[in-house]
Length: 93
Image (cartoon, rainbow, N blue to C red; front, top):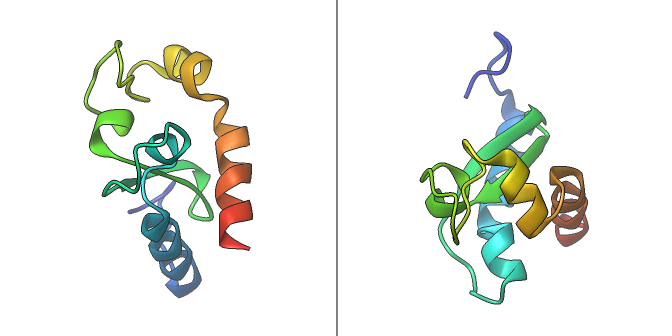
């Protein structure tokens, strides 16, 4: 998982592992329970969202809406990435 030429260090990897343990944040908000997820890197290795394949990159513009490539529709349906990041941070603390 490289970000702008920098690989994840030990602190980054520990944080991302904790985030993955939450499960898909969108599924959690929809009451669908914890689903296996992958990491969506928002801005840096410490700003990551746990999203299932469907909500991350399946490529659907209908429910479940994928973040890639439908960012605008994703935000309209599930909230801003900043609000989801805040929620993840609250769950970790």
